[in-house]
Image 1: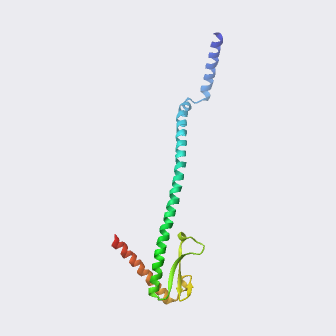
Image 2: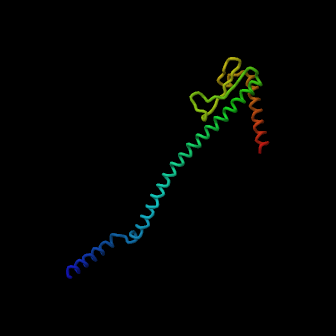
Image 3: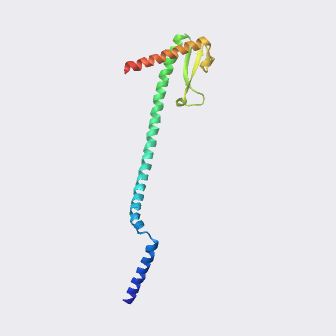
Length: 151
């Protein structure tokens, strides 16, 4: 029994020494910190899961965007050429992706005058540029009219 009492006294003395070194408030805080850590790990896993889903959605939307852009480009390209042929019979123009670039990065105008293809509108004569400018203005007015009419 004396051994147990001596051990108890020694443990009480150790506890008393530790009180000076250990902040008791920290002991209470450790549970909340561990809970927050667990919650953060769960949130991290959720973020990783949704990150993959977001990437898939972006890829699907990019594919849809490219399909819609290609369809619009083909439609506008055909109409643009026909309008140019109407204004300057026997001639043609088209929109093409810039050399070395994708369709989504931009288009440039190519014009065929007779049998000669011009790579830009700056190569056209003043009269030809005027006709082209008026046609672009007419197209813009037509688009605005259609938007207004269709609501």
